[in-house]
Amino acid sequence: DAKTTQPTSMDCAEGRAANLPCNHSTISGNEYVYWYRQIHSQGPQYIIHGLKNNETNEMASLIITEDRKSSTLILPHATLRDTAVYYCIVRASDNTDKLIFGTGTRLQVFP
Amino acid sequence: DGGITQSPKYLFRKEGQNVTLSCEQNLNHDAMYWYRQDPGQGLRLIYYSQIVNDFQKGDIAEGYSVSREKKESFPLTVTSAQKNPTAFYLCASSIQAPGLAFYNEQFFGPGTRLTVL
Image (spheres, rainbow over the protein chains, first blue to last red):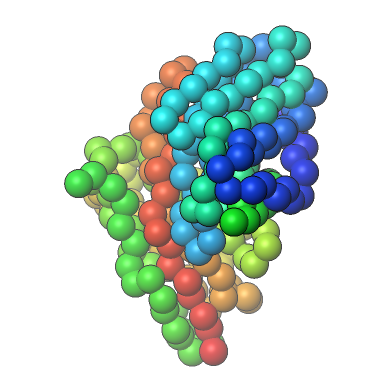
């Protein structure tokens, strides 16, 4: 699996967009980008995934650069409940091995 | 409602005692996983199972044991051989469908916080 690099922490004002970056410069052509988040003392929660096109669901949008070496998770209107650690993972869909969760980005949404 | 349940939420044990953590899912998922998380750290894989009656060691299996007698259940035993068992334990499951993107979507339980005194 390609290694990912994320900032350790970020702040965002409530109601504003939160843009969380992830670098994955060694990503292979068959590897997807997945995002999970973990609210304090809870299990991680799947957010979104993508291959090369931008994706949007009810939780977030995922923007992947054309060269696929980086991506950005966008929470369009952050709320206090979005305060969590966000994990970016890249992985091939036929990889039967484990998911590797790094230390992620700790997003703090403030009033 | 479909989901994963873990019990209990908090567990206290004396040093030297074995303890078993429960994990049950009704999502009809083939694959199940156990992770350990220490404060400020990411998740580390202990054991995983892709099918009933089969399981594989993860990165930190020493001092732990599992069984997978039923598709719905994947209990984890923390033995007295585990040198530092106090941690947050998370169970997860996923569809066993390599080749499909959603294969990597793991569903997590609420976790069990184990404290060994």
